[in-house]
Length: 209
Ligand code: ZN
Image 1 (tube, helix red, strand yellow):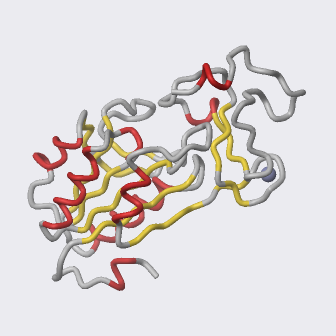
Image 2 (cartoon, rainbow, N blue to C red):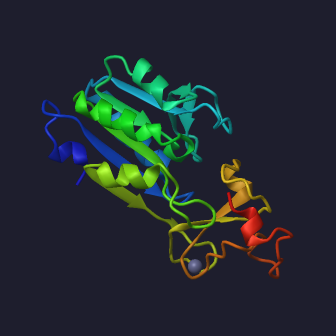
């Protein structure tokens, strides 16, 4: 059941985390929850990392282009400054912020706000993607979404990188990644799934962060 249905908003704040692989619908779910709060005339503010410039600069835009206005910020401390009187604070692409996001989110919840953080729980090598794991640990509610594996159709928990890059923060959703299940996920291999395996010129060690 949706956390806001269980929780009484007049009481203390709380933290919700929406996580999963790429193409699992995290941003869509964040937008859905924020729109419902807005319909209830709750004051909502949405933040996203300033570095996520794939789409419109001042809107959280999901891959299906359903969007709501948001404020780009370069650090979690800016969220504290800009949250104002918001009852509900949404944060997209949480994995692009540093660990100070954990303290900021905690403080916002202590102030009595509902805080919803969406983000990748794993990077392209399948490693926990900080600060999302810590946020998942301290959150009242965690929703783990799945995409569908493009190879076999099973629920997908991983983001398969299709280009050769060792940059953990590589952007460019549609061309650079595809969702894969545990069995089909090949973190050391980058290449089109429909082609023969092509070894990356980088060693797995060399491509690590
Ligand atoms: Zn699969």
